[in-house]
Length: 338
Image 1 (cartoon, one colour):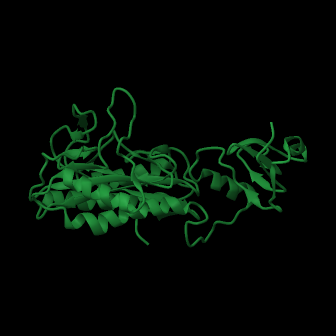
Image 2 (cartoon, rainbow, N blue to C red):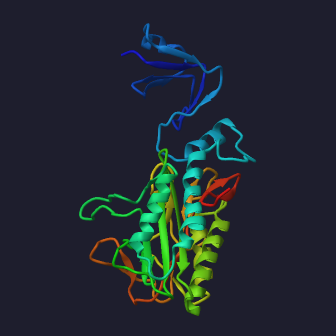
């Protein structure tokens, strides 16, 4: 077998024990060999392209790791990503995917969230906007496997007692006093953005106002704790302590997660828990923080459509979500506009 491309005189950074190699060989867009010395000579024929990296670093996509391979490079090779002013160095595309959602939530949907519109119409507006930005809706057709049907819409729109995964419908017409969470995912050039927001439809009752206020603040508190050296459990603990001080409850059945090349990646980020437990938070992680807060019980049930989750007591629920990256030890929110 001969290589299509050989990159030599490189610092090929991997997650193997030896970690760094001098060359790699590529055939049919796949890495077929990586090593030190000049063993690549046997892979060369007259059509092989040889690239001299002249000592530069090469980070092959050996693992689907969103930004953890960047962290390996920082730790092992001293690549300086501190004080970065943009995401070009560590994944500008994931930031762009999230910025589409930020604009959708701030500029597009608010003018349409009003009494008399159906959740189906809102979903169509959201999908049209996402596609107009060159992205695709990540939830539409999302398939977790049998026996669950693929998710049919571009957004999850959860009204009042619906906690998550509300399926937009022509029959569901918003009324004055409703609250609704819009949760959506964008895919841009293979990278995922993920965020959620809760809107009020006209004037809402005081309990709903407080619910929304506490949920949004809980998200922000969780994000602030998401710093290198802390633990995943610290995020949930901070959120839980704040939310329960107001007499509200936190949903246990759904959680935040890693995000990057897939919609859902490790680690799982529970919205409750014990401080000092769980995986250590590290530079390079990309995660979501997304508390789902209920007025009454934390318990939920899933309806017969196998997607829509509602509060067991029928009381209202709210959710706010951001995607964020840990950079230079601190959380940087991705799902906001520049």
